[in-house]
Amino acid sequence: MFLLRWLRRLLKTILWLIVLVVLIPVVGLTYGFLTTSSLDKSPLPGIAEGAPPPAIAQKVRQATPGYQLPQLSTWLAYPKSAAVHAARDYAAFVSKDQPSGFPYWTYVGRYWQDYAVVIRATSARGVDILDYAMPTVIGTGLTIDGAVQWAYENTVGRVTEVIAGKRIAADTYQAKVAADFAASLDSEPWSDFAYAQKRAELFAVEPATGDDSVRTSERKLAFGFADTVKQWCADLSKSVFADDPGPADIHVWAKGPVGEAARNEPDTLLERDLGADGTIFITRRSQAFTDMTPRLIDKGVSFVEIGGNDEILVTVLSSAEVAAPEGSRILFSHQVPIDPDTRRTALTVAVRKLHNVLPALAKAGARLERVYVD
Image 1 (spheres, helix red, strand yellow):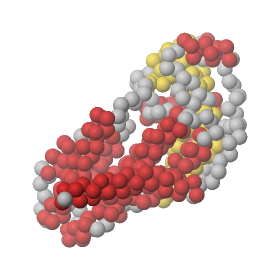
Image 2 (image 1 turned 90 degrees about the vertical axis):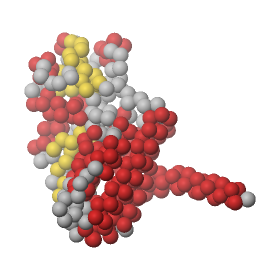
Image 3 (image 1 turned 60 degrees about the vertical axis):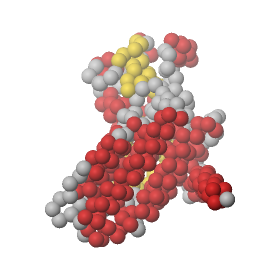
Image 4 (image 1 turned 180 degrees about the vertical axis):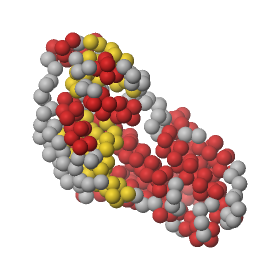
């Protein structure tokens, strides 16, 4: 009888947890849509200007395997990067402050707002509902992680923080782990991070002179438990879900002195010379392409298609609001929560205007953060 009651309670708890997890994206997206505005969905000015001859464009696609990326990939890449931005900002914050002061809920709310904007931007483009699965999972995980950490750091964590009266060696170590984790997301999925190793290293941290023993023990127990759970989740993710990161490279169709400009760029290979119609080169995706784009533009290169598409999403950071240069349109713009003096602005840009848009943004005081080709 006792076992039956225990099983019923366990089943009831599991069902409530499932309901809670399902409700998170519902509530999150409801908040996101209610707090963001509708978008201008008219064709982006300049997008058709300089389009390649249809016959050549078709030939390129037929002759170049992997040339064409899904049309929506540039927008759907942003939610993943939003989680990376949050991890980087957390690492920057705890490098000098206690984690109890981090604005967890602001980042959770911002994710669902930006994701709602992404859905608005893509909903009229024939997107498959399954394309939204991963951003929804990312947002749900970010919400759970933020809520749990906020609750813990502002109760038990806040008490031991007051008792200690200062940052201790375990705090410094965890700040380093946060920085390592944020940096790793540029090149590998979250599930590949060595959580178990970091837990062992945390337990081996020796207190510095004057460190409070209560805070030291609490940090080791709390973050050790968190690392255990994250390692278990990472192992489960890798064993249950097929890890398909997609191709690591991207094909770029450009004009100008492409060969000379790309000669010293890492992991970049000229693939097809189209004569007067330009050159196709292949390079690494993600941050590597972002870093090289301004260098190519400075050397006189312009772009025809990136990943087979004529629109691309970019984000820039600036100290003040920026206007959208010709050939671009702002999707959203907001302050970075841990640094209100910095704004993050996302713009949809016509690829064939990219060589004009990025210099114009730089001239206005904006710094390129990301070109989304994931």
